[in-house]
Image 1 (cartoon, helix red, strand yellow):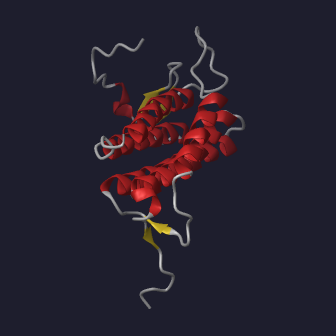
Image 2 (cartoon, one colour):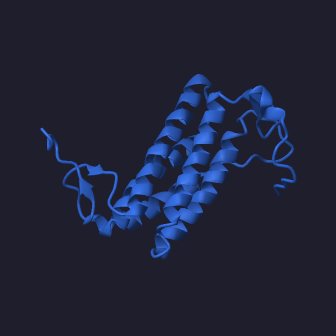
Image 3 (tube, one colour):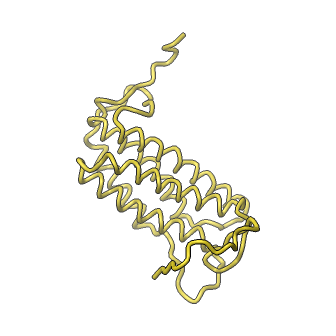
Amino acid sequence: MVVLNRIYTRKGDDGTTSLVTGERLPKSHLRIEAYGTVDETNSVVGMARLHTAAEPELDAMLARIQNDLFDLGADLATPPEAATKWEPLRVVAAQVERLEAEIDRLNADLEPLKSFVLPGGSPAAAHLHLARTVSRRAERLMVALTEAEEGAVGKPAIAYANRLSDFFFVAARWVNDHGRADVLWVPGGNR
């Protein structure tokens, strides 16, 4: 259980922050950048959900994703070699599989793509496209962290981040009248 009685501690005034283990890292560390960008993704999903109330199936999917994003943040805030008194929270393959099933569910309703899609259409789609790009940045940071520190991020966490941007792309098309209201790229259209 998380208990937050005090919001500010002044401990980060020196430019560091704590991991779950209590270890302090610079706020510019790749691990902090990665879970901070996961948090940013979650905020964008919250904005998208302001426009998905009329789509309860999709809104429920997004609510599950928001919870998963907190799991992913906790995973990233606990290095794999961390010695803790409890089992660290990790993203698991079942979360990736659920996301894949939800992508397939939404994609089944879509018009086939005939061009690349520009971000936009409905307000929900625009926010979902923003969530897609922010989640891709989180994924790139997670991969960079793993390249810098071998094994720093679990494979299920990276797979989840990879599927997440796919989910947001498909969901954006789905809320755009199942792809019929997509804004399509016209190559060289402004020459």
